[in-house]
Length: 93
Image (cartoon, rainbow, N blue to C red; front, side, top):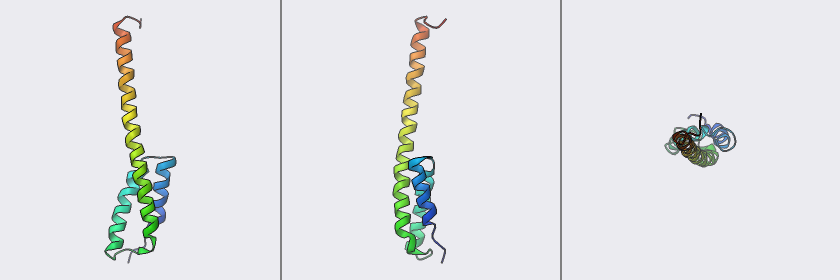
């Protein structure tokens, strides 16, 4: 039986909320694989609750990451529109 990676998954999930949002999808994928292995009896099931908590944090971190990317794209589009309007009116010389 393989040892669980619950602590690593939980740390990655928490990091995705606090510092580095890219850790969210990593924690989410790792948690899904580990939960499947725990349910099939291939991995030590003692870390199941921590793994589930890390998965939830990873999901929330992934949502924050997606929202951040969408907001950044909207911001850049608005900046390009403002620069285009300013240039067409001759404000930039």
